Length: 89
Image (cartoon, rainbow, N blue to C red; front, side, top):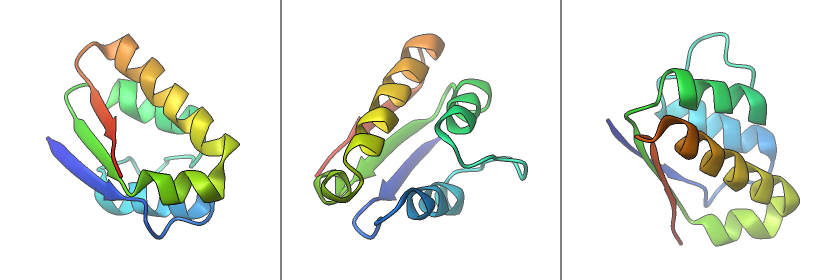
């Protein structure tokens, strides 16, 4: 499954998770944290291909949180070996 998530209108962590929930088939109990999203990616998304767009705008607002988010995504890709996540402007 391929998904594209536009981060151009993300101004907070809540906005980020709103976009994730709107696009990805996350479970109802999704906890809206980095750890919870990691669990979704490794448990449910092993064969997903996710492209996050408008990343620079989001990074400018979320800074450290977005860097942590990207590191967590890289870790999830490494753990699954089949998950693909890219970040584009």
